[in-house]
Image 1 (cartoon, rainbow, N blue to C red):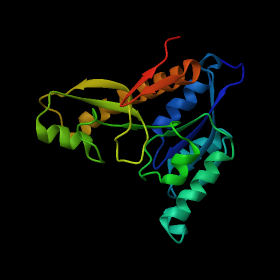
Image 2: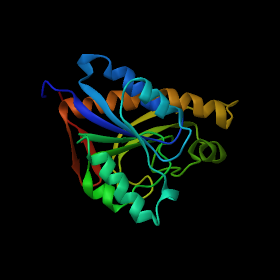
Image 3: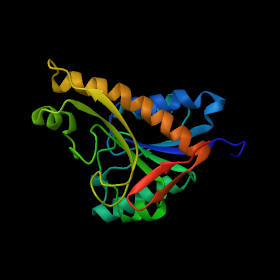
Length: 206
């Protein structure tokens, strides 16, 4: 690995708890990464203020500010490309990425989702898990492709579903495991690399 920190661009749509976890990890030189840009798709995202307070460049790129979705996609691709990140991390970003972004960072965009994919894709993962009566839930980190939560899986973590769980209590436990998995896997990817073989993705061994 180069002595220079590997560069991360992070996409958010809310408070930025995953972003904060990554920023905390980057404070340790041994982690070997730095967040060089944070982009939100809406106003009022707490994660933007967190990044600004830390001196990290930010941008707010809203779909409604553009004539059509493809213009937004190209603007987002240009903004992400400017700081030349090694990896783009979609961390609670609530928009599907379009072809311009995917072409700019082929195989270098990851997303974290609060279910054990391919089960329960979409925005209601924990609620769907409870409704189906599963005994374990969890989070999945995967490479982003043109589908919804369909890319190759890099890592998964499991959380037991308790008899007394509500959507809120299950989601909170998933988030804790999800943040740890995100930090751990991003660090491993940037230190040692990863590879894709068809539908399967693997972290390289150190």
